Image 1 (tube, rainbow, N blue to C red):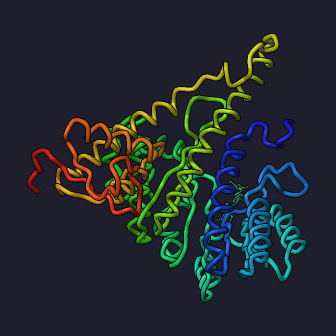
Image 2: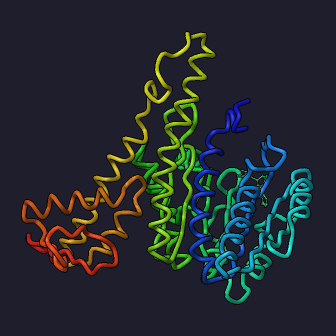
Image 3: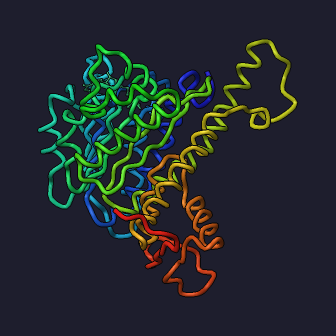
Length: 384
Ligand SMILES: C[S@@+](CC[C@H](N)C(=O)[O-])C[C@H]1O[C@@H](n2cnc3c(N)ncnc32)[C@H](O)[C@@H]1O
């Protein structure tokens, strides 16, 4: 077993890395104004190897919330913080319950419930609905059935609130062509249309469709999808779907996505090194990251940059003039697309005369959200 305790489940390591980064930033920002509640709907523990549960989603969330509260109270703003950890199975629940009882204190209230979360949605909504409280919801089931929109709808509608859902894209794409499987609650009534697609196009469409439905159901302004790769093959395992009503949330989550991408390559490079050694290879002369091989992430980044660029250009052509903030929101909701990509397209469009940028306070001012920059399309505007 590796020191991290994640050997052969490195995808969980990446998931936990992303959840930790997100929650650290979100709790710090939102905890200055709100009391915080955190609900892990499928808490486990599952395959944990650490006695302090530092390799589980609930152990990580508890620790982040506890330290954030401590930091905030040092600045005279101590929010009330509470966690609800839900687990359906008896054996993991008894471990979870012991953890909750040990950690429960007046600083951070911790409760565990032996529930099937899908049958207790009203209880969860009631738990989250205290005044001046911002709830974070994590839905991380096995498979994909519990991620169905109608099942989780009341959780999506919590206002204020943010939701992170594990979408098992690798399973779902396999079931799209199975006529016995009804994916309408996950991908909409028209999901059979996806059957004409294959490979990366199908995967992109599945994730996009789910994000659109989450956005509509929860009246979210933004939904992002953070891809998590399989540790030992060049493929994505699942996406962490993040729904928010605030642009600042997108900024935070995109930075989490970038750092998780970087971490992905380090973690997978180590897995590849281990595999070389297990196959009887001699010790590597180079660092694992030098010998690391990966195509899938690069392809996603290239494809999504192309898709997002086309989408922003479409918006420009149909509107004629559009705030930079709207282009930013549109582009950054594509996985593996970042502000630097958007700026580089606009830069090229400015140079070739496709676009005129208005609202810069000085000529070299970088385009930035919230600064009043506007893009004016200089070509033929499409008639709507
Ligand atoms: C993928 S594991 C969760 C791992 C955990 N979130 C983590 O990252 O450390 C899924 C867990 O959800 C539990 N589970 C599955 N269906 C559930 C349901 N309907 N309600 C509550 N828990 C459920 C399973 O027993 C299992 O422990």
